[in-house]
Length: 250
Ligand SMILES: Cc1cc2nc3c(=O)[nH]c(=O)nc-3n(C[C@H](O)[C@H](O)[C@H](O)COP(=O)(O)OP(=O)(O)OC[C@H]3O[C@@H](n4cnc5c(N)ncnc54)[C@H](O)[C@@H]3O)c2cc1C
Ligand code: FES
Figure 1 (tube, rainbow, N blue to C red):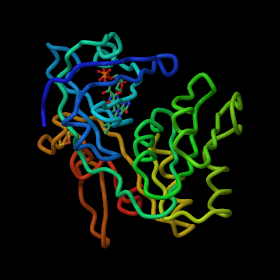
Figure 2 (spheres, rainbow, N blue to C red; figure 1 turned 45 degrees about the vertical axis):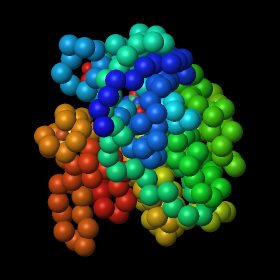
Figure 3 (cartoon, protein in one colour; figure 1 turned 135 degrees about the horizontal axis):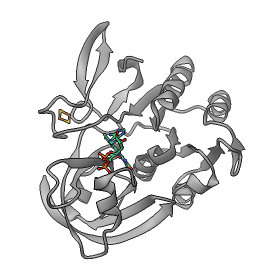
């Protein structure tokens, strides 16, 4: 569904990272965790920009974004009242498994996992990895919806020093999860998938690719996937962005 929605709030989460909220009842009603919205960032720009849905509260839908180029610079100077053209919710999200789940997010990849935590059916633990304390986002929000939250920073300025891998290995030994849901950089996703699969736990990963149309027509976003030993090209925008980790060719 494509429509015009009004910005109600924009706030900084870290340097160059913002959470922007839209009054978007239709999107909020239809959205499920792991899906994304495609935002027209500027009236003269033909291409939309994809952002994972970070949170839904009532009629309000929030995305968290980092300023990278022209589109996100345009979005960052939004003020309440700005009207923005959004298409969504798009893509195939997380499966919302029964039982206790573990979320693993790296950097901005933490954002769509907040929505997954809010909608989870069982208890939720989260491991969030950031470069440093200054880059850490959404900690209070995760604390309010998760049973346990472990933060790891590469420079040790907050939480555990290092990546998400050591706390993930530890939790896999001490707790039982029905699934691991992960979003973040590719090397982190590979490690999370390897560790979860070795422990016999289902793992769902959210992929990011450059996108064009966002609806399956242009094939800009294809990635290699496999099932039953057959390899094929899948569209991240339509078949994903969330895939079972065993399907994604690493
Ligand atoms: C399914 C999906 C969900 C996403 N969710 C989020 C989110 O929740 N928050 C967020 O901040 N970003 C997210 N992104 C990335 C976001 O779409 C890009 O950062 C944004 O499109 C950049 O637009 P721009 O016009 O500012 O930058 P551009 O001028 O288009 O690019 C600036 C720089 O960013 C790089 N870049 C642009 N798009 C991508 C991409 N898809 N993957 C990797 N590098 C890219 C470019 O190579 C360039 O170096 C998501 C992308 C996808 C595909
Ligand atoms: S972005 Fe066009 S097919 Fe995925």
